[in-house]
Length: 586
Image (cartoon, rainbow, N blue to C red; front, side):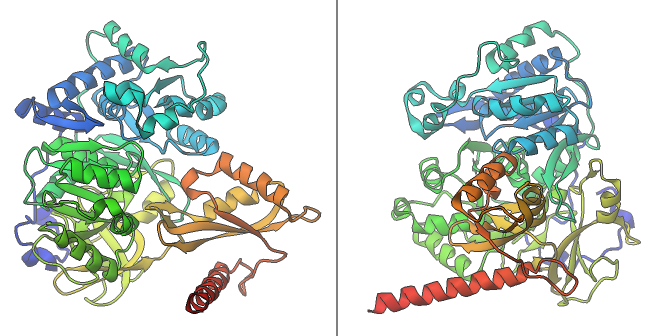
């Protein structure tokens, strides 16, 4: 880091990094340039595989440049925001780097977002163009009149499948259900979009520096309301260099399973950009299932895999993995939620029993610094620890909300500083100022709102979330957001949302609702509310159940006592498990 000479922050982990360097020299160009540099060195190496179809780095650069010319032709200019709502497919990779090449900013959103969420993302980012799949056309068309979007480009997954797969595969199951888009629909089809590149001859490449903005990702921020996080080229390029530095066993051509989605910092930053900017090979999975994940790991002989704890729990139960050979693995990473000591022990044994020479390594980070910013080092682990900071990254434990650093071993708020720290929350200067603070030690720190401990050797221990949040299948769901949506419904007087433990998802969303006077508590009412939710709430955040209540428990200051509802649910589960156990004994 350029600030190295003036930094006075403590770094007790410096002597315990093993082969991982403490500092690096970072590339200062754009994300596209980082990938283009690899393409110059290894033009014939495979950049990514998509269901049997391999694309080399040379081919990838050609496709990106074609896409960039097309973007320029439809009017995308330097600084313009382009929304990308695509799964992990070739078009997503092409357009992501093409937007970067023309100097635009990629606004990454979940393709399964509800209509109102899509409208919010398009307006919050002031997007001029959106790219999505044919199966999501209806949602975009329904809300585009409420946005400033000029062009919608429609892609199709089947266009990128190898010929044998076009007749089958599980992907086609969903494609076949897509309603036909009218021939006169006001959209540009992907193939027609690419043909527009013929009309652009010059000036489609815009020089961008590391410090220039490049990507918007979304998170709950420090208050749990959705905010766009503006990230720079350097944020992503630095992450790529850090991840590889933290994995000295990496070699050019190594394969990483890219199943985590592109709108997620881990999926985009680690599984895609780290690999492509450092010479790796991505195995793209557009629609995630644990079974498909397991098959790809084994069949493609992946070297690196990443996932949330629930994924590893699911892999342990899959019959397909019984005789799997995992000897190709060099790195197995867990993030998104706490990895229990018991699950780590079980999965480490599973890895060794299946010829792997590595153990699962836990990491931690926030979208405010793209994704992971610390990781268990390859040479040593401490039970319950999330590891040591990446190169040039600093962690500090303080009294929550202050700059008062706590002694080793004391619990406080986790702060993070380093080259991957975000630029800002777009359109939210107050919360940016609250979250990013410059200290006397020469660093700008992210106040994460998470609680943790640091020991005298610099190992970090995650202790919990200071902000109210549900983690379901690795996605962050903020109860306050769901409650705001529910409370806006004309049938509902008040609501409360909690997370209920689930063996596969980690948690699932449950809503408690007080109806307005005169509204009947019946299945018809419940279905009306669920239909409303499906329009306003992303699929992964949908309540699995809505329970009607005459009254909701309150705290002394009149707030809904969500912890009381959590305790009631815990008692119900305990009673059900006890009954099940008694019945089994009979």
